[in-house]
Image (cartoon, rainbow, N blue to C red; front, side):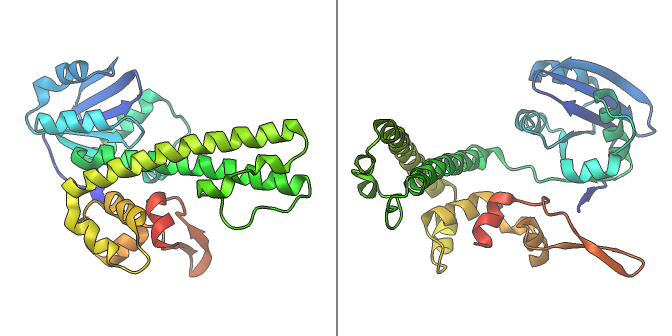
Length: 289
């Protein structure tokens, strides 16, 4: 766990939502200078913090909509700290939880050097990484459809198709093996949707592949020289890591890839492990597979 321990003249905690945000801004002594809810827009945020941009640090949790706030702070030279939401939950958990309490706690933790940091992924490669993750979502949906087709054969006690159903040629005439027209229609619908996913996935792969050539062609080539790492695995590792230099030790990388089980111990007794969801799930699926 990395904590941000920088000192600044002003500290701003942001409880970010899709349409509104809560701001709590204090000086170094803890005097509250700003405490309000505003619209979740760049103009509204910058108008609120503009009088304090001289040595200001802004902190927000790593929820789904932090991209624009990090980019806005970088544009105006404001230090932005992305708080690790799962670690933060363990630290500032309390009896009462609401938006007003949350953003006040962010400021207190920020001033005290107790904010667990998450990595602020650079915007130049961020959209491509998200597109690659979207491709994974579509491949899982296609797998669900193909599993349903295979299960339908078992359901009606028919010989299941041999081998994988990923190649389109292996799906030809599968619906005709069912006598019931309703069952046949169900399988046809699954396979038709699979064909749509095939085209979308293939197009996304080509797009990401072309983009990777402009981002880090050399790094992608080195990854693919490793036995067992092909084009898709290489792209996933490249975009999920971004740069290996952000990990000071190999142990940090192993932990980030969810390859390390954190022991829970007390009074010399081992109570099990924890932190199974801390780290990068996308990276674990490729480095542990």
